[in-house]
Image 1 (tube, rainbow, N blue to C red):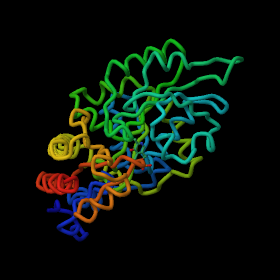
Image 2: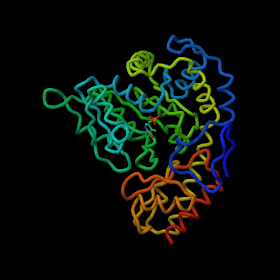
Image 3: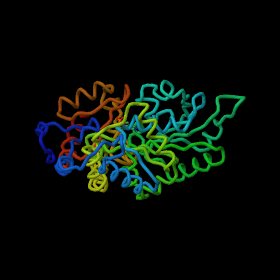
Image 4: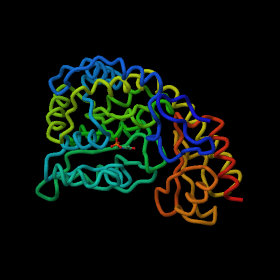
Length: 354
Ligand SMILES: *Cc1c(COP(=O)(O)O)cnc(C)c1O
């Protein structure tokens, strides 16, 4: 089963693609909006569709302004650059995307030292963070804290609101910038019922993605106050991220924001159901209680193999997955995976452990 898509062939019927929510393709409504988008040169601030998107996303997250950027990586890197002067450091949980998947961009592009703080399930404990805050001349001065909501490498874990509030207090006490990598902040909000702005207002800056579970083809936004976003525009230019008639992309992101957020609850339900089926069939392979949003992490050992071995075995059964480390495999549920697809995948995975 494949959802309706426009202008591209449906994926092969037997495959269920659970590698990532980045594989979602634009919906028919997005394609129509892209075709009809009113556009101008956005570097000259003359693209009305980009401006509508920026106003809409800022409002949703309880901030004054936003800036459309090509990728979540660029969004994070712009924010880190503004948050921490060169030669200072930013605290973050050791499993954050900014350490694992952004190619040392913060030290290379902005001279920022990332300081990895250990913590289970992506957690940055405020007390642990407080012990790591340093000031000159005794160490590299700390200028920022970064969190990730929901947490990718922690299998879609949601950082509790009290933890984020504790980090806000720490940032205020110590004069630090608090940044949120909110690539999947939509999932966190739908899962917990905390409104987007309830999260958004806690942070000095956020980077949010339209191109993950919301299914837009391209794009992210930097969100913050007017001054931060004005400086973000300069940083985007420096990094080569200015785009001209970007309204064709912003149009899809507007549809993503309007139509694709609430439905993430379906992906979460599919993830939970799959985890329950697999846990029952393959003891020790997954803790269903750990599934908070759209991801499921499988331990490979109970299947009698390792991460790459399990990916191969599942692939042979028509279920595409990703080995995120040597002994774990990640399943990601998204718009193009229907409830029937999820159930079919769950049965195949259960069979793989038999
Ligand atoms: C995907 C992702 C990003 C980066 O987004 P790109 O558009 O791929 O650069 C940042 N943070 C998290 C948590 C992500 O999952």
